[in-house]
Image (spheres, rainbow, N blue to C red):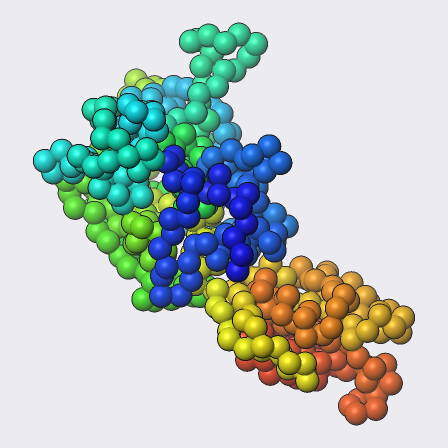
Length: 489
């Protein structure tokens, strides 16, 4: 597909905006996904009419539905279907002492190098022997600047990636606050309140879905690395000693969740972080990585960490002067109180949506028309899991004849009481099928003259076409709700 030029200026990180730099995977390039997302209303550059803003994206109508479905499936699996996890919705801006206690004010920093010639800045990892690797996987150590070609680097320095703001009318040090860089700290700060209000006993979890903000040095690769994104996190509190087994259980459960919603098994892998690379609070961390089509290749899709009792002790000490302030209930032996350990499954909604789009995207040569039309060019089919598809079905009257429109609109209104439904009456039926294939709609329901006249098949029936098999089935209008319910479940 033709590239959309207006995306180039905001797609890549610093120094990469002049060209596309995506690597083809065995299935689809990032370029193709960007094109689809813009053209069909999944994702737009934020404020594109003003040139956009690097690292910020606006989710369009279909993108909102996709993200909502991902969040709904996460909530259903990890909250609704369990009796040991509850939810909160914490404030994006909170008391800055939260971030001081957690260590973010002091330690939440990336390594930054700057080209003295063009002043482009790059986020790097400092490896053995002082070697620099950028966030995109480029070796920058003693190499030319990707932007201007010069070899004139500053020394690596720390850059705190939290966004600062001010609370109240005076912009002063005393009124400094931060946009949260993660959702976890709201949970830790509210641990005692939630536990007492719901009379919870270990083990139990607190879940949260919400926005987070990081002033990334080099955002890029579309929505893979953004400055504003949405997280889904759980802090699962357990007794010390039970943490290792709970950790392994959560790794297996989260991996299975991605597979159940359509990600390819060979595009996922589990990577245990070596001890020397663990965060200061972590006893163990396993990343679920996905084969993204970026220069870096495999990259984190989700992280599961054993954060021990670090966070609760930090907040207990900072807020109450007692690291044991968040002690667990007396254990069954009645011997002592202990601060719980916590297992943290954490993932980004935006990055998950990107992975689901990548693994669902297929190009079919020669088209897939089930009509007599001749379709010779390629067709894009987005084989999203039905639970994630923006629209669950599309209602397509064969023509704009009033008798067909009336029945089709009535069917759409009935089905909308349960699902998001598309209605399309523009163009040939073949082209409408293709449009729905491209946005992942699993079922197309065609209302034709047999529906209202019953010549070749019983009156009051419609033809339902399956996106993946293209098989067609005649279903009575009165049975459609039950039929779809069975298929979608």
